[in-house]
Image 1 (cartoon, rainbow, N blue to C red):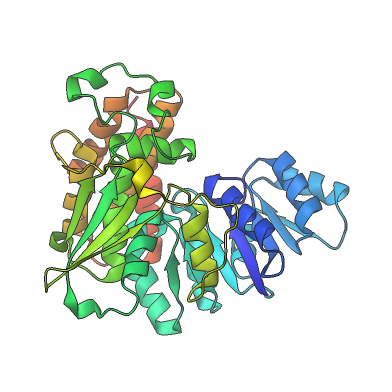
Image 2: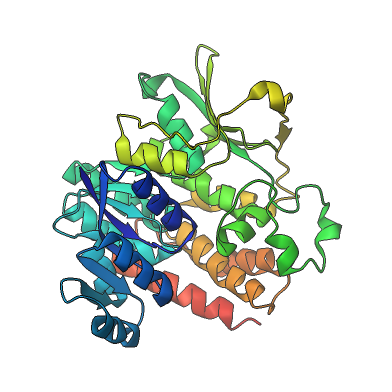
Amino acid sequence: MKKISLMGATGSIGTQTLDVIREHPEEFKLTAFSVGMNIDGARKMISEFNPSLVSVQRKEDAEMLRKEIPSSVKVLFGEEGLVQVACHQDSDVLVNAVLGSVGLYPTLQAIEAGKTIAIANKETLVTAGHIVMEAASKKGVALLPVDSEHSAIFQALQGEQEKNIEKLIITASGGSFRDRKRHELVGVTVKEALNHPNWSMGAKITIDSASMMNKGLEVIEAHWLFDIPYDKIDVLQHRESIIHSMIQFHDTSVMAQLGTPDMRVPIQYALTYPDRLHRPEGKRLNLAEIGQLHFEKMDLERFKCLGFAYEAGRTGGSMTTVLNAANEAAVALFLENKVSFLGIEEFIERALNEHEVIQNPDLETIREIDRKTRSTVSKWI
């Protein structure tokens, strides 16, 4: 039985990770988890899974929970709580499903503790990929991708040699506004942006999908996970979200991983690798029913955030930290109706243009740049 620590248990990936654990109680046990401020959700999970450790965001919520739950369950809060969840002594695998760069430091501590990492928190690698990958290499720790696109690449690489890769092809649904021209994005609402055509995801990721920043972050993540230059990573719009990604080899062969749009599949694969478990309730892919698959070239003028990500990735150093922090701050402002949808792009571009890049920044420098960028963007409204 694998024992699981889960950061971000009430988010989209977190709740679907819990579904996988429920479907296979003989294979997995939840030993520790973290939530933000969803204390009702925490109560229900404590009752159902009986973990050893729980972490919440605020001290007052931790104090309240301690009075309500069995003393056998330890309750912590803040960053120290996240670190304790990530490094829990009884866990075998950490599922990093938190949103944003908050997942970086706990992940590094889990690597130091020798935990296998199932990583859904792409911001960890975008913000500090050079530090994370070096630490994982030194400790011999496996980073198993949970994002459907990176899981697809990882699965397609099984039995292959990385030296034969010519190109990675990451697919993109196009998001909520894929059929709109740029001038039609003026004045779009939060509700419209959150109406994703294919996937059920959290608010921040859905907005990133609409702006195509989500795909840009995935390009940077793929660069670090698979040690591939940016010029060998393409993005292809694929409306149906059936092909999750592809690899083109230098003999012209192309390997693709296909499946229905269900995040439980890559989550379960990360938890069971190199094995696979049966999913009796999972919807099977029927290509005869689908009939057609569609593909379109990505327009970097239409989807400017994807272009920003390529530019920041190629520049390297602290530029990707600024990209991520500015995006997180700008998306938060959009969700609060304080900036327009196109204002997200404007704030990101301004932050990138005003930043003086630092090559090979250390962890403290990264965290300071992240904090400063968020603060600066928030003051532009």
